[in-house]
Length: 58
Image (cartoon, rainbow, N blue to C red; front, top):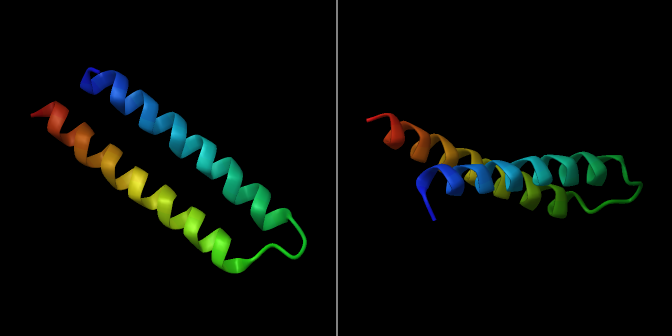
């Protein structure tokens, strides 16, 4: 898998997690720990995307 396609896949996963976080926050009685875990996953993906994007530019 090329770096470009890997980045695209990570961006899709990040967008999917964004939707999941929003849906979880709207759901009544949603476990706050679950929302926090989704947000952590989203942040890790964002950091990986940033790291790979900066590597691609160099």
